[in-house]
Amino acid sequence: MSKDQRDACLQDWMDREAIAESMIPLIGTLYRQKSIVSSIYGRPVINRSVIELLKAHRFVRHMENEELSVQDTYPLLQALTEMDVAQAHIDLGKLAVKYRTEGNGKDVKEFLAEELASLNGEAGDSENRDVVLYGFGRIGRLLARILIEKEGGGNGLRLRAIVVRRGKGDDLVKRASLLRRDSVHGTFRGSISIDHENEAIIANGTYIKIIYANNPAEIDYTEFGIENALVIDNTGVWRDEAGLAQHLEAKGTARVLLTAPGKGDLKNIVYGINNKDIDASDKILSAASCTTNAITPVLKVMNDQYGIENGHVETVHSYTNDQNLIDNYHKGDRRGRSAPLNMVITETGAASAVAKALPELKGLLSGNAIRVPTPNVSMAILSLNLKKETSAEEVNDFLRDQALHSSVQKQIDWVNSPEVVSTDFVGNSHAGIVDAKATIVNGNRVNLYVWYDNEYGYSRQVVRIAQQVCGVEYPTYPSRG
View 1 (cartoon, rainbow, N blue to C red):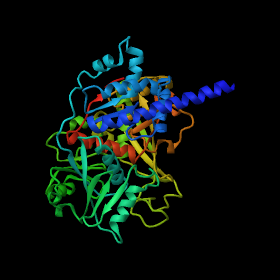
View 2 (cartoon, rainbow, N blue to C red):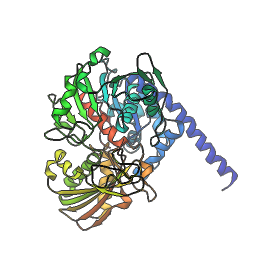
View 3 (tube, helix red, strand yellow):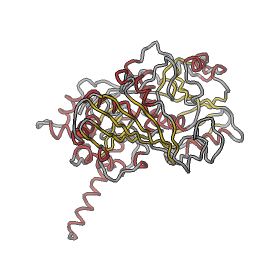
View 4 (cartoon, one colour):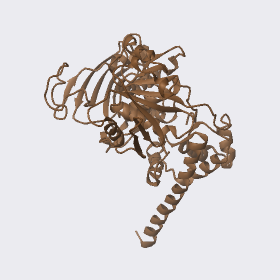
């Protein structure tokens, strides 16, 4: 490569950096003033750096086999800031590609006016909905991070309180530290301070009361100005309706959402699959398990397209706090053995739990699990016998299309790289990610490998349910494609 070519390469990078820098304040203005959440092929770009923004554009080549540049998306972003639109999720990447292929000579504003014709008006002025986190473990802290990040976008969910049992030492400082630093998910994006006098944490301007209590019924949330709250129980202590109903005895509680598989007749909701089953009269709901959320969307689209005769789900799951660091007593079989040192065969109810969201698959799936010495990101291997023969190429193309253009595009992600490993999916917001390179097909027998961030991806699914039950869902554009 000549010096002129090297200089041109560097100049091109610097030009794209400059455009990305110009995009950041526009993205922020749309988010804070109009409640417009911007993304690039499902990758959120709110509060992202220049490099992260450029990487989000670069990612598109894996999905569309063509490049996407900030030079493509910047004109759309500029036009959006001048339009009377509000309260929506807008995928700038997909709109840019659609404009490139279907613009037919229209200018950017004309194209956007047609695409967003149903989205007009200023952001509404209704109050945010109160949310209480009951428990502050792995899922609780990730839910807190997500809710805090989303609050800057205007109307939505407002994290008002976190309920825990008081620990020894300076409990408040330790809770704040665990929110600030995470060995898997990195440091908190923003600033955190502590109000010792009022026992509260202030994170990016969100004032969060820490309530110390031993059981749900003893709490009066109205004392803290909390009304009609959604209580998200992430302790897993109670998993049936009778136990979770204790939350409804607390003043200020309107609904309860469990972040674990619900027992009995409790509705287990996998967002994107059976969330339409949520009724206004439902006071207690379950968000099912991380594994059920990861596999159900893929199973649904495969069953719709090919029909599933039967199958087996093998989960390769990261260890959890339920296991022991070193060998010690545990009521469960094998789980007493050291989690960081062993692969541990254990049971999973995820395969049978799929039927609660997809009744048509009842009795068709078996399942088992292996806990492995990694702290996060798991994999589900779906071994399916289909009702018709297919090929690996056909299945991969179909699942890629579902990840890009279907109603479950927020649940199913798709990757086609021979080098990805589990840590590459830390922080992925989808319920599950299909690994196309690992797909095996022999006639009507298919093996699919589905990665999932069993902490963050699941937490995003929980928040989606919370948004629906609180009535703060925003439309997505383009809805398909």
